[in-house]
Image 1 (cartoon, rainbow over the protein chains, first blue to last red):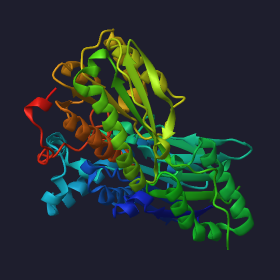
Image 2 (cartoon, rainbow over the protein chains, first blue to last red):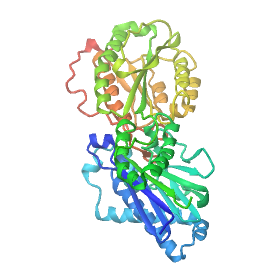
Image 3 (cartoon, rainbow over the protein chains, first blue to last red):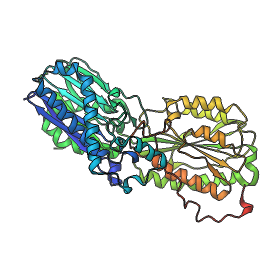
Image 4 (tube, helix red, strand yellow):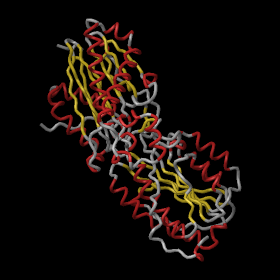
Length: 271
Length: 238
């Protein structure tokens, strides 16, 4: 039993509905005894990244399986995991690459996938086939004492702290115009960031793919989401959030960025 | 149970499309200025159609003219649905560098926001810059959105300086569009107004390896049969 309540959803973006494309985001949520694991990925979706829906699903599965394995082998010791976090990032990148290449070995690129690419893009793909599966990845490891967040790419994290009015926005990606760091990059682990928090300081967390913040006219409009969700939880309970989240995200994509949106809201019930 | 959606006001993402047009005296020759005015005016309905197909991009249009100095022909971003084209008039020299400085100021953050889609900048010229264009271009490319913008160059007639247009584009994957007659100019203007606008309004993400070091929008190549239906005689060539 964890000390967290969670609600999450992943919806296909408005533009992907129009263009008949799949949802390229993915999410995986697992409980492991008293630890909650959340992984969220955003497949890049550009023409070169034509298998990014597969790449994002692989990413969330690989991350959660690997972290769960580490925790099982260390008797759920998050201190040890934190100390080895850089190595963990490296291992996630390596296992994702291996999984992708295994998939590619059984499913070679076909003409339909590459014929729309120009010579230069084909060369890029020839040099690095992982690009076809390119994705971001954010993994949260939440225990009653500690919260570890490891992230590559433009996923966004809002953290609401105890005794603080402000919501902290965590998005280390300084890139603009839909450019992002990616698991598909060579030496991808170098782009990973690791943040840790004492669970006792945290009231709630909202982790999301960039389609969510990009849908708001102003950043403060997005930051308001976490406060509103806390109010809704107080008045209607976490189940009401889980029941409505998909509809809210679809509405948000339709009237906002048009992108796929995945969001996971976690509250610390110990607070 | 009807619960109000969490969060503040939603908004589609702005996509700034800026025409940067040469209005030097030479544009009067052989009807080039008229052809450009007509081509841009005729492109508007096509841009509206593309914008309608991409409801999550808010296409805003502006225009800069440069000759002896540079000015905003349309200074405030106008939503494509309300955009009207007033004819440009040719006069003076080719102060392209001054146009780049205007662009640079427009692409600063603020007024631009980081949630915008990559802007589209279309430079159209028939000649050689007569001012220090390289300083203006350098300043433009120092701006994050100047660097990440989709930059396209259309040369009108054989006197257009291709090297300068290439410098402006700064992307080996994007070729200079060379228009040698009014029909070609119309087609290129239509192409940038539709195919390029559509590509820029897509929210697909990219990794740095999958994109050029400058723009992060993949511009489709002009198809081989692009000119198949064109009927142009030798006298029409600029």
